[in-house]
Amino acid sequence: MPEPYPDLPSLDLLVSVGELGSISAAAAAHGITQPAASMRLRSLERVLEVALLERSTRGARLTPAGTATVEWAAAVLGDMRTLLAGAAALRGDRHSQLRLAASQTVAEYLVPRWLHLLAVDVPSAKVSLTMGNTARVAELVAAGDVELGFIEGPRPPGRLRSKELLADELVIVVSAGHPWSRRRRPITAQQLAATPLVLREPGSGTREVLVDALAAHGLDVSGAMELGSTTAIKAAATSGSAPAVVSALAIGAELRAGELVAIRCEDLHLERRIRAIWTPGRPLLPVASRLLAIAARREERQQRLRS
Image 1: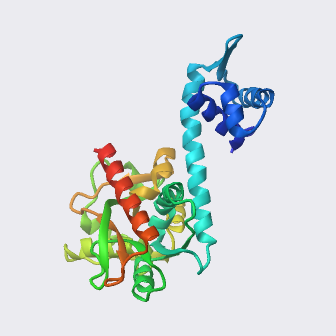
Image 2: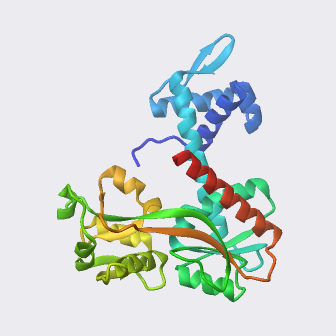
Image 3: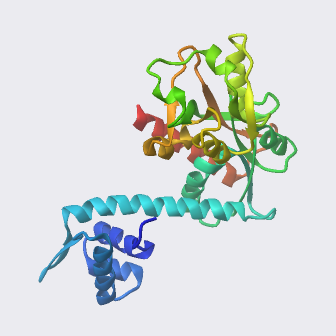
């Protein structure tokens, strides 16, 4: 990160100025004096080298740059709350009210946001989260070790109840220096099958979708290496080790930075479903039902916004 960079309390204070309309109201909401709030906001302007507020004898109001900064700051603060919610779940223990398990992609990119919304709705909720591949999550749910699981894959486990939350596209990616990155035409399924790939381990929903898609064309997947996490696979693909197939949820930053390049395949549709799963014949705890409703509502809203 380039230095200096703004501190989170100052960004939070600026967002409050935007929401409440004045420095004095924001200062009161944060439990500090108005002079202290003014000093903190001036320091923020120096760090960002942008005038955020127009000050006059009648008070202060956001500049156009300040209004834009408030929007960006709100997103940063939201991501930080998401991080803290996820970390709190990961350090939870077996005495938590709600025990969850989630596959790697879902745990990294979706569950923390759902937990942040749950904390807003049910502040007393205590959650623990276990991560594993899809097969492992299904095992934990079936054994009663967790109340609710989140998995990805082409089909739901037949022995468990499930609710589909969203569709997740899988993307073929290569490093910026890979020969495929300069292609103008899509690759074929035969070319993909003939190329050793960076793969997730057996039991992963990502791998299951890829294997099924190639099998529909009478083809097998070829592995250059097997890695146990999406982060490791992205790193291997970025280094140029081999192409990989990963969730679209996981690669936005790498695509924007040009570290990875998405490759089209003309005869493969790589898509999986992300689902919640739980044990049949066993009613969900109220807090689990609430989380499930939050996840379903949020993803339905996100899909409407994308469409």
